[in-house]
Amino acid sequence: MILIKNAQEIEAMRRSGKILSSIMHEVGKKIAPGVNTLELDKLASELVFSNGGRAVFKGYGEKNNPYPASICASLNSEIVHGIPSAEKIIKVGDLVKIDMGIEIDGLITDMARTFEVGAVTSVARCLMDATREALNEGIGKIKAGARLSEYSRAVEDYVKVRGFSVVRDLVGHGVGRELHEDPQIPNYVWKQKDIILQEGMTLALEPMINEGTHYIKILADQWTYATKDGKLSAHFEDTVVVRKGGCEILTR
Ligand code: MG
Image 1 (tube, rainbow, N blue to C red):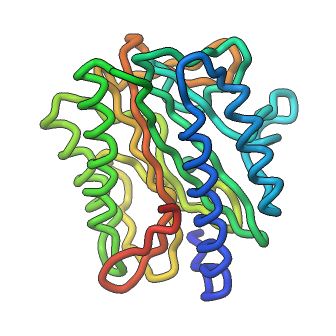
Image 2: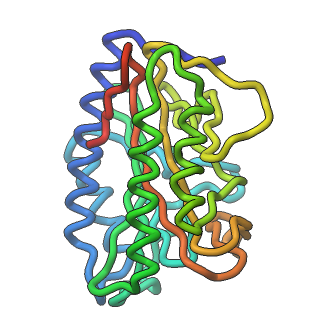
């Protein structure tokens, strides 16, 4: 069931999104060669706490292997859910993907950005730019009365002609009262039943785009997803609320 948010809930999500995007900005500023991803997690945790929020990724998942950190920090061929670690030291040429969800006043927003570290290869730059722009193309299709597949098609088309591939096994999702709500939001055109978007739906849109194959694998920590061929991946995510004639982006 897709939850429609009322004006009060949307206002809380607006606050949540604003704080989340300011934290993402601060974490982004700290990304530099020699910094490890656990330091980024520590900074994010402190900022969420000082803003009176809760990092919703921490403790998420199965009881025997809950997610241990406030952010996901995925490097290069890692797609999403990279666990911050003192051993993961950022170097020049890396693509660093930071994903974070926070709860403020009971409402959750979710957001991810890809950061380049110093001079990256031209393919890394193209992949990052294509992923960001694919999300923008998709967001341009979101409005009350539109089909969800219009979003998916816009993302997939933008990426395909540039020679990159859309991750299929991981998708976006509804968000707000819970971190993961209905509907699932593929970044490619799928065969299942389509959805008509309604005003007040709140969606986490998050294309994960690979340089090579769309196939993925899970690493030994049972969290980190990486590309099967070891090539690069990029990820951008924003939380939006569906409106008449368009949508409002809550995490910028
Ligand atoms: Mg998400």
